[in-house]
Amino acid sequence: MFQTALQQILFVLFPIGMAYSAAADLLTMTISNRISLALVAIFLLLAPLTGMDWQTFGMHWAAGGAVLAVSFTFFAFGWIGGGDAKLSAAIALWLGWGNTLEFVSLAAVFGGLLTLVILSFRGAVLPAAVVRQPWIARLHDEKAGVPYGVALAAAALAIYPHTIWVKMVTG
Image (cartoon, rainbow, N blue to C red; front, side, top):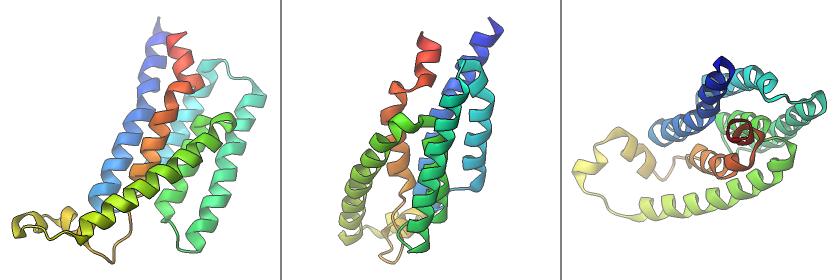
């Protein structure tokens, strides 16, 4: 019973982490290193409770490492932020090798849609009362980036129901 309750608590931490990282990126244009580190730590706590074998465990780490290598290359070219790179790797660690291609593909689609929405938003004239909100002014600034953490979190949450974590809790 204790293990089941612990599994359920840990099971909801990933979606909470995704919601937090998306909201933080939208409001501040920053994804804290703490969220990526927390996701890795929670993965390490939860993995033994799933009965995950060493090969699967290693493939989850391989997925995270591969995404980290690619995303840091993107960061080096200035295409994404460092927080986005770290968060995408932590997400891939959670989702595993079998879900990483779908995650990356969905993140690209959601990121493209998000970019179109942000560009449209930036082209609109906003009332002064709205623009006075710091997070809205930052989001409306044409020189600012796109809060890609929103797209990453949306893609991760779309794939989460197909993962070992959901199977662990639902049977």
